[in-house]
Amino acid sequence: MPTTRTDSVDADAVRELFEHRYGRAPDVVASAPGRVNLIGEHTDYNGGEVLPIAIARRTWVAVSADRAARSSLLRAVSSNETNVGEAQLEPPKRSERWWDYLTGVAAPLVAAPLGGKAPRPVAIDAAVVSDVPAGAGLSSSAALEVATALAVSTALGETLPLREAAMVAWRAETEFVGVACGIMDQFASALAREAHALHLNCDTIETDDAPFRDAVLIIDSAVRRSLRHSEFNQRRAECERALELLQQRWPALRNLAEATPEQVAEANLPDPLGRRAMHVSRETRRVREAVAMLDAGEPLSGKLLLESHESLRDLYECSRPELDWLVERSIAEPGVRGARLTGAGWGGCIIAVGSEDALNAAAPAIQRDYVAKFGLTPRLWLSKAARGAAVEAR
Ligand code: ADP
Ligand code: MG
View 1 (cartoon, protein in one colour):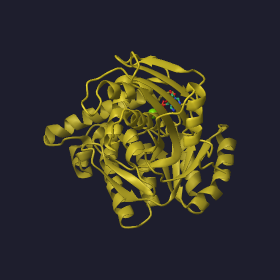
View 2 (cartoon, protein in one colour; view 1 turned 180 degrees about the vertical axis):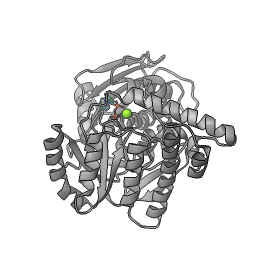
View 3 (cartoon, protein in one colour; view 1 turned 90 degrees about the horizontal axis):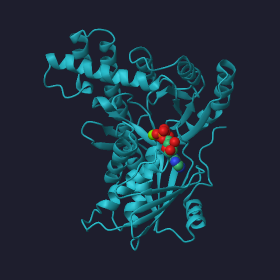
View 4 (cartoon, protein in one colour; view 1 turned 120 degrees about the vertical axis):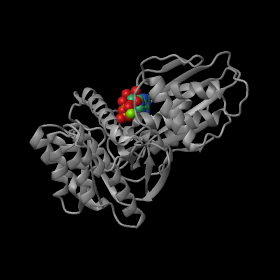
């Protein structure tokens, strides 16, 4: 049976780790969830829309801030890592290690407190516990960054709005850690609400909530994503080229997602640019359709999910036989309404959507058949739309 969450990972656990490590109580505990995207894939960097939920797995960060320190230094410990981190914050020093995510978030908060007070040295001690699986595409990095942003800012006596926390987290990941990700992960982790999906326009950064009461079964295919980086960069370049060609005809187009399917068809772009552009154009419109359904109190349509998957498979060409098989196998189970690849593709996860009972009942057979067919051991997680980031205690 897929696990929903790990009960031992909570505010008490992170407080205990902090006290064990530093010999005193933390000033603040904050937490932030991982996320999974329901629909809207490869739309984020094309100015389109996405629809993630926060999952019921979280990262908890406990922090203290010592203002009597002589230099701004970060110390960090994580229950998921054997190495303890130590890093200079002013100027921030990169280590290429796991605590870079904390350094990248804490450094700007320490250097420029929101209240505009003159910067002075602050030593930050941090402890981390988490049940978000790392590297599985559920955005453990964003969960860590967002929880750190809330904990550190609160320890510094500031109230960081959740949107600001998302932006600090996103800048840390893109500018400090150096991963060129879109804004979805940090926004979902910071702003998603329980029993709702977060509808995010990646061009305007406007957000709204859509009620989402189904459960989601997340299946990690365990396929090595060796091609992922080069193929991903190639898709980005193809999208840029497709936009240039479309703009020659429609100069007012601001991004690829804005182009309508009719415009893309009319432009008759060379292959594969036409297919890439058509995916982006239709996928962003599928997000709008999904939101309209959810807002009307209807469940997320399985047809829409499957159309999204087929488009990723045939037009964007970022699926894999293992992912296609998992989607087909999942929707063959009673009560599973729809399924699709989620995340960038070329490996990674699929989601199946339906009632919690149906997904729980379907999971063992899908798992067993996948192992038999591909000799790979998938990991499965079941979640409903969970709450976003929060300061838990101070
Ligand atoms: P994803 O965000 O999909 O899980 P990433 O590669 O973006 O994968 O981020 C995973 C990295 O984030 C880990 O290798 C580790 O460096 C860091 N990380 C995430 N969660 C934790 C944690 N609880 N403790 C320490 N480091 C973590
Ligand atoms: Mg990540």
